[in-house]
Image 1 (cartoon, rainbow, N blue to C red):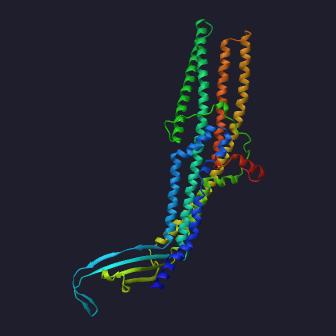
Image 2: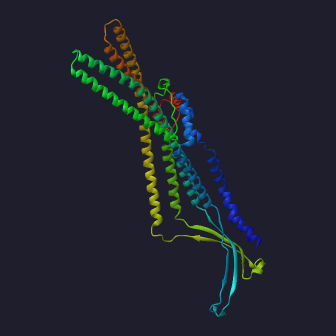
Length: 471
């Protein structure tokens, strides 16, 4: 009995656990190394030199519901991996039975007859089973699930990149809207004065009614612009509150004039930059995962071998249950091979191959889409920077024109109305300059997102060292 017990323990527990212990240890170590604060990439957001923005990014990590949902999905995936690992190990169950056979008809065993009888039966066995993974099929299943977990982790990383980028873009757009509202109010005030002075000119017979109507019409259009800006301000504020999961929060922001422009961003970006995008990594992992599934489907045609055994007690009298005759032990190997399955296994194999082909096509598509997004975002950054520089020059010219008009007014060579026109034009040009400034900053955020949440200055350094494969 002791020899059988030792053999069963070795067969069912020591060997399988030893074989799987290394895989379990590696997986546990990998899960412990995940540091989600790295997904925030605070070092990049600090380059905008806005403490309020970096503070909000940290607050996103603590409060945003989408990020919490993504983290929960990762935990769900980790538990699925644990379930798969558990399926590789022996299964031990206890199926006790306490029953009584009532008196019934006579029982015959060949020529031997047992008259009707009644008795108790006490059965307390430990039943163990283990499928010998000769072909590595169970290990491949676990590897497939581990790859699925890595895909989920990349989805979580993508959520961090998307949410932080969307928040920062809305934050800067809100700053822009604040400044545009301030300028638009000045424009409306000036236009109201212009409309009043034009009305006086008409009353004095110095202009036509068309001039009065045109000024009043322009005034209403400027008020409409102001109304739309106020609406945009409210929408952006509410959106930021949703990101921060606090509808009562007051969204503080930096003044637009204090925002700094990012300088010396890369002129060209290597195509290899897409290899760190979450969707690119997911597409690669999907190919590997389905590759494991194809191997599992192929090995499903091979025979399986199940080790089984029982250790326990079986007695018909309670007072003799711990006696030697009541001891129960058995063990064996049960081969299993499907002779006919109606074509199910072949259909599964073909299905897995189709899924593999689909994953390859998706991988190629991901490369093309990724390159397109990086190229488009890089071009947008360059264009917006040029537009901003042009608007700065144009604002300088408008400022000079306003100063000249003011000087002419002081010497009596220009009217007050002409000064108001020049000031109004200067404010409109200032609005365009503010819009181009923030549009450039938002486009840098779009480029940061397109390259997979990497520091653009690090990419710039790499690009300067390797100029052979530029987009």
